[in-house]
Amino acid sequence: MKTQTEIKRSQPNGRMPVIFAAHGAPVLLDDAVWMAELFAWAKAMPKPKSILMISAHWEERPTTLGATRAVPLVYDFYGFPEQYYQTRYPAPGAPELAGRVRELLRQKNMPVADNPERGLDHGAYVPLVPMYPDADVPVLQISMPRLDARELFKLGQTLAPLRDEGVLVFGSGFITHNMRYAFRPGIPQWAKEFDAWAADALSRFDVDALMDFQARTSAARTALPTWEHYAPLLVAAGAAGDARPQTTFPITGWWMEGAFTKRSVQFD
Image (cartoon, rainbow, N blue to C red; front, side, top):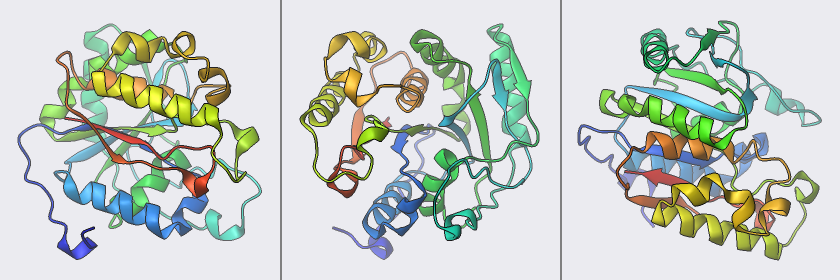
């Protein structure tokens, strides 16, 4: 495995990939292995002009644009040690990107709103801390309008032109997310089954299966009793474009050898 200093950023080819990252709880920031994996992944991609973040932790209708200037982070978690509430990530705002997102949504007659005081939540900043530690890439977070698979995929399709403008469209969630099993040791069979099913559907870029995930495998009910963490994956898949992309999994494995898959996805 290459060290961080040996990894060289790939050269831009005129089009940014689209990614989905498993983001972990704030304690990910103490997981040296996962932090290094995220850092290496970012180094292997072209450095984006800006980042458009879609996190599992913001659902608001209509699609809403967060702050376009640096504002305090949203510490949307409870019961963690004080150190995790002291994390800072002062990324520049992205007002130009916000204007472009508004334009793209309005071209498709999709309503859009603004919440200029809404900072990045932990689904956004936790993976960004290791991936872009200098906080030198402008970031805009937008909400998911609702948990409707086809609407989320269409939102991604609408955002797809940003790929040719140096923007990294970044979905952040978890492919398996059942809080009843959080921090329990051991990888349940249902988690392995759903992770394998998702890997297969993503590799084939079977859009119908990805949107109809609840009916395609019996493991879905336990893997995602609620599916807001899966939803950003559908936005990312939509943004990957109409042609079948090359799909890779830069990070795999299991967080703390438990029920939460670390599987992350890159569409090229």
